[in-house]
Length: 403
Ligand SMILES: Cc1cc2nc3c(=O)[nH]c(=O)nc-3n(C[C@H](O)[C@H](O)[C@H](O)COP(=O)(O)OP(=O)(O)OC[C@H]3O[C@@H](n4cnc5c(N)ncnc54)[C@H](O)[C@@H]3O)c2cc1C
Image (cartoon, rainbow, N blue to C red; front, side, top):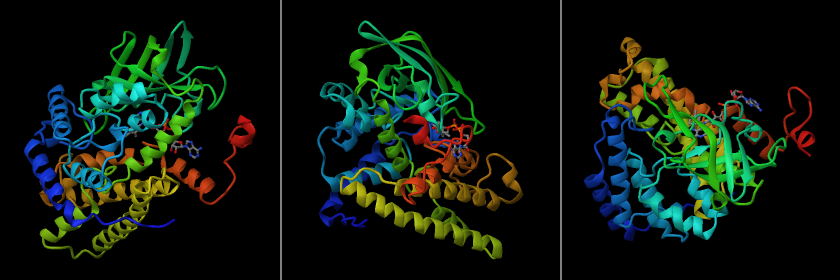
């Protein structure tokens, strides 16, 4: 595919400078940021500060296209993404992907109702897809939604629901037809404050709480909150999962956030360089990986700028960047020397605490948003044209099982 990322004209320098100054003046100082700063806040105070920051940005007219039915100026949008991303605190609260689903499959009324409060940080969203027995094989999900009058009644359980403890709304996939596989799945907007929704936070080895279990005990959802047609939810899920691969593939080593391989090299340089040949080679390897990822990113951005949906290159990039993130964090830990055995150690005592958090979070990189094995399956099928993998138990391919 063509790689064309038009340069941002100089006439946008003022826009960037004003935005940068605005972010510097309004970026909240978070208790949680001192420790990690890249994932989900632990305290309600920090959530409120973040809501205020997102509201300030919106009131000043800095709104991302994903929360609008109209397309904004493409150069301003790119600058917004870059500068907000570089700020190091979330500028979109909860799950940002639901907006893409509403944009393509929602009704005008749903967009008018939910986009403005999402953009203002008033509504926080969580993605309610994964279940204890449905992760990679999401089409085997069991949470049921039964139509009773003009409401669906939801019974079941989700897990790994990021931000759910702070969420006002959930983007839910549930089974409306008792058939196997992708057919029979429907997408819904779920009010997380409804009776029967029980959110139970899960504490991770990072010491933070990103995820939750969410239980549904006869939770009622009005028909108007169905997104798209009944039993056609898998089409939405596929778009969301594709967009997720792109959104998790930014520059920082932790799904686009946090420090980069370049930051690590910079720390080494600042601290007298490195004469250990193995360490130098490891740093060079990180540089090579980062450069390959940068070039693939240009292709992804080119496609996005041209208005094309994410293709299999997003899977290539996600698979590579997840491994790369783990390599960066592992090397940062090694550079701590024996102090690395302590949880809070950072390379050469660098003040960025994300290094310490990142090492413990890094194993999640190759799992969330589709595991590395699943990305490689997608590449084998859609890029290399190999047949769909066979079911381990029956020996049948997906096509033979489902059709
Ligand atoms: C940080 C993070 C955030 C997340 N946030 C959310 C969220 O907000 N909402 C949500 O719904 N979910 C979320 N998830 C869940 C995530 O989508 C799942 O963890 C992921 O899809 C994998 O599913 P699983 O955990 O059930 O593992 P499984 O699917 O059980 O996989 C277990 C192992 O088997 C391998 N495997 C499975 N199938 C195949 C195959 N066909 N071929 C080869 N190997 C295979 C996998 O690669 C993996 O190594 C999050 C996960 C993480 C780590």
